[in-house]
Length: 94
Image 1 (cartoon, rainbow, N blue to C red):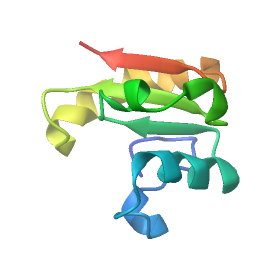
Image 2: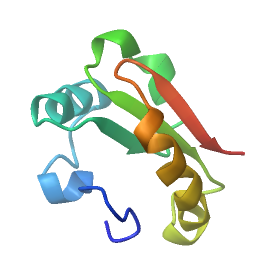
Image 3: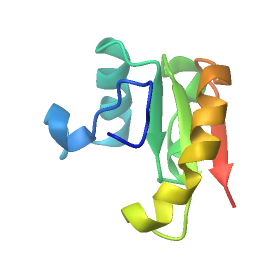
């Protein structure tokens, strides 16, 4: 994703994981070596046991998951990414 300068970011669709449910999606991301999983899904942290996930989760709090709503959150996301820790959830945005 070109907005995340300095980070190797990939979309779920690019990995071929579009139809994968959240728990399996997080397991696959951790097994693939990702450090963090960035999502607009505000319910994810309540559906999964985060300490067992094996990666950090960042929830983007935007009005929608459209790029024009998420893009303004990118500077704050870039600020928090170096600080996130495996097994935790960090929120970015309102």
